[in-house]
Length: 334
Image 1 (cartoon, helix red, strand yellow):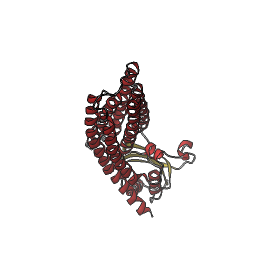
Image 2 (tube, one colour; image 1 turned 180 degrees about the horizontal axis):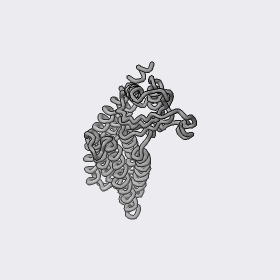
Image 3 (cartoon, helix red, strand yellow; image 1 turned 135 degrees about the vertical axis):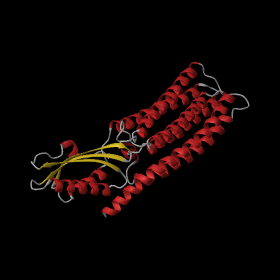
Image 4 (cartoon, one colour; image 1 turned 90 degrees about the vertical axis):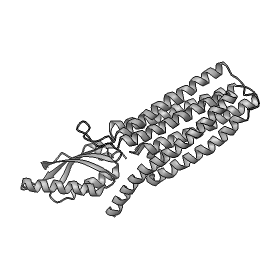
């Protein structure tokens, strides 16, 4: 059972990394094509909803490029200045994505809506049908991208609800792409709503309403992303399952009486810092204690092969009363 669990962890981490890249590439390809068609539709009709959606697609394309950049930079080797490596580059660039989505996407759409409310213009001329056609094609392309993100996420999500998966994921790429694609689909529906009512009523205010809804949506998604990425940047503990496996491996090693306390911290999606104080007997020699620590480290790494463990184990005498604090006994961050 333990071996199957370890294999499952390794498979999940590998699939998470590869699946995240596939989801990013699919989203990037879709957004680049969609952005061009939306700008053409805006030039032909002057629709503010189309302009807001075009800028949204450009922002999404840039965001996917930033995620790919973060993944590439995170693979750099550790240096004396950064001894734990560059794994958090992925968290940083995902946080930048939330800022871009908030400013370039959300705030621009809200500004454009405010401008259109003051100067509403109907959609007229021989090209009135272009926005509808572009939006329908865009919905089809975004649905393909969203489907890819859902498929790749399901490979590692397990039985977790979607909200919990987004909150607990240590690799930022899949949650970011999921939220962006979701926002893109809902935004397209808002744009279709605004453009459709504008064409039916010949009142440009509805175009402004659709634009405002897009802006509110993007600002909400950007804030959600920034909160989650902030938590990862500050440093989150290992998942409940991984912490349990590591504790079992250390506590079950010969020469270790028990774990007095242990802390874990993700320094990257697949890199976990482990600091533990373990109890040893008073009769053990220095060589025996060193061998016990080495066995504990080896056992922990074998227990979670999907993670690179940076381990620091300190031996101590068991004086009692130094167990895990209440906040840690309750639950670890998933």
